[in-house]
Length: 111
Image (cartoon, rainbow, N blue to C red):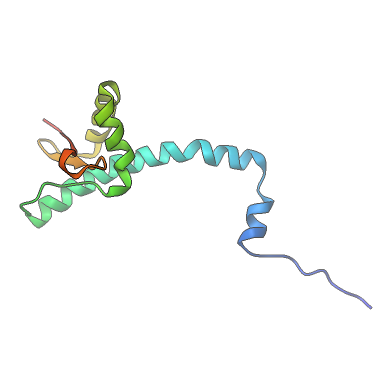
């Protein structure tokens, strides 16, 4: 009566097997990855509008509303976000960042 133990597989098993160090590192890196994706999104939004030759101003996706909200409420944060957002944008371009209120989106660009 030789019974083999079945190896458990699946997403919940995988999540349970991760160490505490893995989860601390993951949670610590998520804000950094979010900020980096914002910089890339600014560059992509501007380039897509340049390619399409559209009449609308380029706007980053609504997932970045927290960044627009922060830009609206803090002058220091606005300058830091503008500096990093401009890294991936071509020269002399403008992009809008949604901040939750459609009439008051934050605008910045390279000059």
